[in-house]
Image (tube, rainbow, N blue to C red; front, top):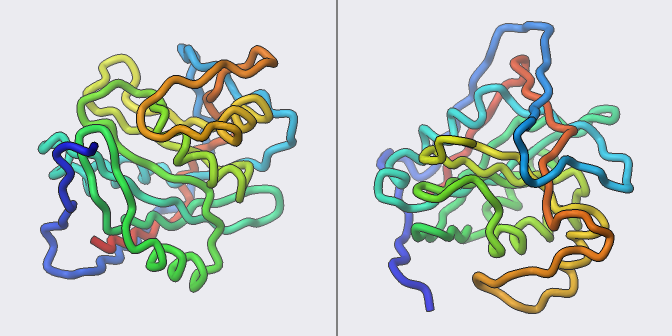
Length: 225
């Protein structure tokens, strides 16, 4: 049973808002680290490509989510990237129509997301969502949401924004591979439930070590709400 589910609306009069931000070129690209992580760091048996995200992406997403955050409602978005060489560059943030509660968020009309990805030849390299009043972690529902992204693109990430968490305001996570991926592949449950630890001793999910903040990336925001 879902309690207190609301259709998330946007205050802007336009049904689709596209905001393109250009930034001056600077050379420095910063890796994202989590020295105090309790979740472990990416130790995948696969060789992962690097993922570059705009240095403005997380702040811009929080600004778009602010009205919902103030109402204790989650907000979610989808990350679109192009591939050049061995690096994914996240240049597009898609905010779909969605239903939300204080601890869940469900994208609606997903064909609109696919249309933008197809039109712009983007890879779905993950998603971003808020925990308005919870700490920064991946819930069991978040893990199941992450699984198909990582099946499609092994480098896919899950960004959790937790503005009320005083210790860790954001995290960039992925399912451990093969450990966490195998656990989610076999899990038939839904909703909030515990998962067994992988047999190889790895955590079910972990912090990404292949993600970089790139101040040179132009970010396009497509708000479909």
